[in-house]
Length: 107
Length: 119
Image (cartoon, rainbow over all chains, first blue to last red; front, side):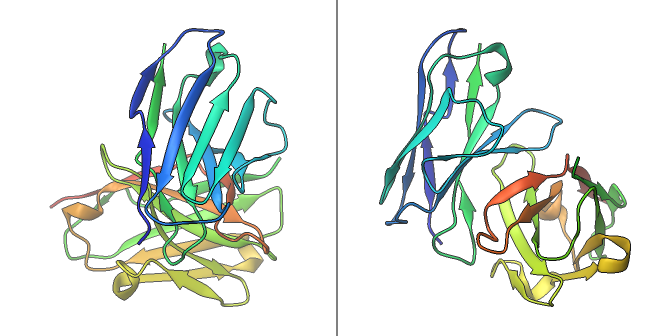
């Protein structure tokens, strides 16, 4: 299985900050990388698909980049509703598709 | 508004079969891939498998021997059965939707249901 490693595992930030979360794959996955936001008790939400494509309805302050093994999710200006856990996921080599361990973004 | 809702017993005894259903409302269940994903306490997300109404399925090799998925298009719902469960199967179970072109990109999820395996 392809291992996905996110860093940091947790992050403290303030409203208005620019935040970057990194995801590294154990082997090349081209651009088959998705990002999700998960708030406790809610359904996870797709933010970015195939590394850099913004899902419909997702605010433009979210962006993704990268290819091969290294990827980033950037939030340009943190809003109060952005405090959540973020997961990356590779859909290149399956089965199985695999997720990162998550990055908890806290105030 | 499309919604997914998981349902099923919250407590299952060891060695028995875990059975969950995901009901889809607001959209057709046809022409999409439907996955189950779980998250054990304090651990990451684990994809269990998916199926399509055509009968096409794909399961996580680590769970393949214990998993069965099915879809009921007449009732807009799909199901998961996981047999011979143990405490390691305790988790929040999510259902999720993937498209025909990207079956493993999950654009819609349910809120999840906690299943505890305990005697």
